[in-house]
Image (cartoon, rainbow, N blue to C red; front, side):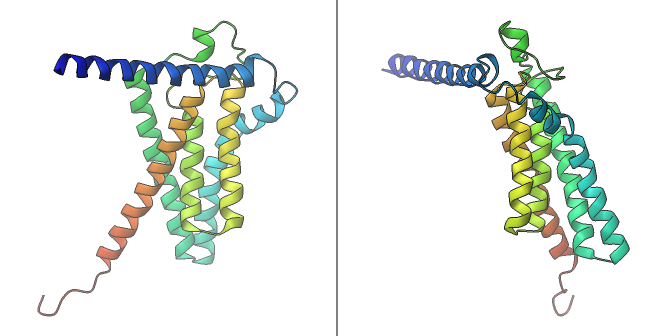
Length: 205
């Protein structure tokens, strides 16, 4: 019975992995190989190549404006954004060098590489950093007119990495999860530390 159960688990794991890989490649094939997005390469390349300006510009602006106007909320938001980006970068680096997944254009000759992309593939660093920044800013300013453009940018960056042939869809999905998770943990941890730092001591202490 145990042997049958073990064999069943192995079959399920193999089938799930095979199905996931098939979906992964099918989407990559549709967006990159079959030219469904041809004519839009420059648009997606713009979002991909200029992601760094969003990552640097957003926290620098918040910190600069916060210190100039003495806005403590803005300063905290800028610091949280930078820390979230750092955490996301560290986690992404650790996963890349642990899993060591090759790039799609390295594995499949039919994949057209339309942008720069080196090193390991999983997860997408562009996507994780974009979603870390978008989530951190959105948590600091939970208004639709802040959240919508932030996630629109981050989502487009993620899609661009698939269209340009340098990442699998699963790389981008994992990058988004890493980025959002890093920002969420960072913001929650900072709020907890802030509350405890300013907690009023109990009587007699």
